[in-house]
Length: 157
Image (tube, rainbow, N blue to C red):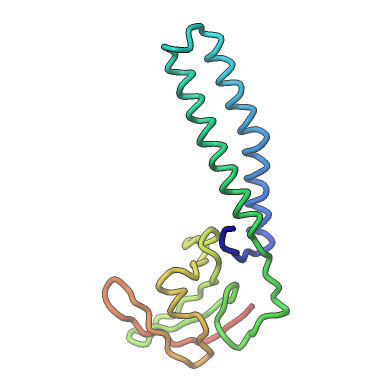
């Protein structure tokens, strides 16, 4: 039994779509590669056949891992969340105490993290430092340059 991960509806749909793609198109492509390699004759000296079989094994491994992730995935219900504290799926506006710079991040699961979209993982130093904080509290974030303090300005869901 894998660990339960929480996703947005959009994030879970992406995972399910990827799984469907691997099970249909992915499996068909591999089967075609194996058939083409098999048609080339002696399998004992056929590197293309071996490569296609290896690729098939990797694909099946990826499918089974993704099936486990999807099986343990839960969609978050915003209505049941404590919106006074930073948690998964909260959008947090924070201010660097030292230089006054502000930035806004949304906390998401590791798989949904995307820094370009300002979506950071709960498992990241920022995510860990911000979890459970309330507006007005100071979060101490362990950054590569040392501990940086951020004041929580806003929490939205």
